[in-house]
Amino acid sequence: MKAVFPAIRASTFAPSSKDESVAVWAFQKNRAPEDRPRRLPDADALHIPLVTGDRAEGVLTVRLANPPTRSEQRELLDAFAAQLALFVNKERALEESRAAQVAASIAETAENAFRFCLA
Image (tube, rainbow, N blue to C red; front, side, top):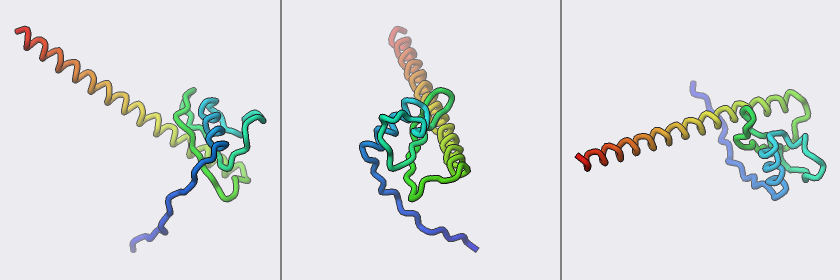
């Protein structure tokens, strides 16, 4: 029997300027907005920084109908954000490695072409 899953509509959430400022703060400070100083505006969504080591890879923004009321719910979101941060970090490192390989290949080709011209 084939499993049938309901269609999930793409999000139409467009962050407001206050949400953007809180997300930027979370990214720059590598910490959740719950730890923010009072001068930051309240946000309509949760902004969880995607942190690996001491580097923020991005921010996971989630708008829920009801904010997490139990610590288990928030811990689940934090765990998801941590896994997402590792994935983003790995993909960034892989892309940097590919770019370095391409650059090395181009340099080697140019060096071989130069030697050929001198021969």
